[in-house]
Length: 249
Image (cartoon, rainbow, N blue to C red; front, side, top):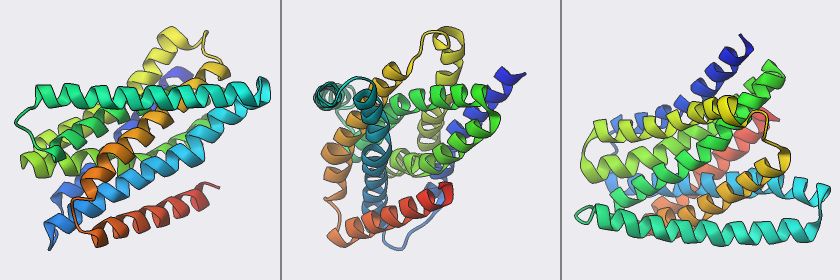
C-alpha cells in the first residue's frame, strides 16, 4: 500500500507539468511579447532551481561527507558534461528537424532536459514518500510548483512554432510522465542501491544541464523578442520563485 501511495504522489507531481500547457489557450494582445516573456520566465526559473536548490543540495553533501575539492571537481565536470550534452542535442535536433524553426528546437530541448530533470525528482519523491508520507507530500508540493513554469517552457515554444495544441500538450505530458516513471524505476531497480552520493551527483548533473539549456538556448531565443518582454519574464519569475520559497518554508 505504501508503494502505491508513493507512486501516486510521484504521478500527481509529474503531471502537474501539464498545468503549464494551459497557457497555450491564452490569447495575448501581443503574441511576440508574450512568447519572449514566457521564454525568459521559464529560463529564469530553471536557473533559480539549479543555483538555489539542486547545486547546493548536491554540493553540500559531497563537501560534508568527502571534501570541498571533490565537490568542486564533480561540479566542474558536471558543468562541462552538461554543456557538451546540450550542444550534442542541439546538433541532433537540427538534423532531425531541419525545416523547423528555432522556437520549435527550444521547445524540444526543454522537453528533453526536463525529462532528464524529472527522473531524479521522481526518485526523490518516491523515496521520500516511502520514508514518510508527509515528507513525500512536501517534496511533491515543491515539485508541482516548479513544474508549472517548466510546462510553459515546453508548451509555448512548440505551440507557437507548430500552431498545434495537440503537439504542445503531448510533449508536456511526456515530460511530466517521466517523473512517475523515475519513481517506478527507483522501486524496481534502484531502491536498494541508491545512496546520497549518487543522488548528489545526479542533482549536480541535472543542474548543469538545465543551466546550459537555459542560457545557451532559451535565453538566446528569448532575446530575439523585445528586451522589455524579457525583463518582464525575468521579474515575474523572481517574484514567483520568491513566493514559492516563502510558501514552502
